[in-house]
Length: 148
Length: 148
Image (cartoon, each protein chain N blue to C red):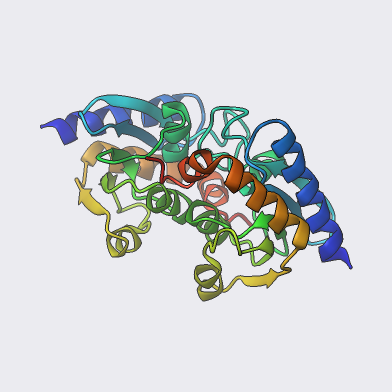
């Protein structure tokens, strides 16, 4: 199934980030024709950049677009308010989420704003994020603006 | 008054971007001690990067922070949903806005999420943005995800 395949690409991005010492959250963007137009992962650590969550890095890598009609965004973890606001602002109408067990995110907000959200409850995404949160809890909290 | 001074710095960023051929929206971030910790402007054109609205570029330039307690964000134009989501996610509790005449933005959303918003109705911010929107309407629409 295409959603599973694309989420797998996002997971590979998350794993790459984890191996680099960064936050293991990955993302993939697909256009209306099903073509992958961007991939990315969290780069808070790698680029010392707080706004580069996985979804944002993916948006950057996909480059400027006139609009996002028919696009789907894949993310290994339920989107934070920054990324959810971005999805709504740019009119991305379909989001596939790996898991929301390690971070609830803003699925309700997305749905209330007309975004179709597919939650896959992916075991690999969940296990990797859980492991990271246990290993580097403070880095995780800083990434969502809740550092001590 | 300090808010006027800091908004002026944001306006200078907007003007710089306009002179570079980019979108004239600027931003400044000040910490709990009133120290400017970052400035920035929209770089959609300059870096071919759709997520670099003025506020986002400012956040990037301020670098990673443990949290944003006591910080104030200045922006020449009322924040879009991406930037508003970012403000809420990172716990920035005070935002000073130059104007909301050329773009309504999401002041209500910010207030509903506990953010103090100060709207200055600045004539220079308003005039520059109006001029830009008249000169490059399509670029403006693309910047908010509404291109043709």
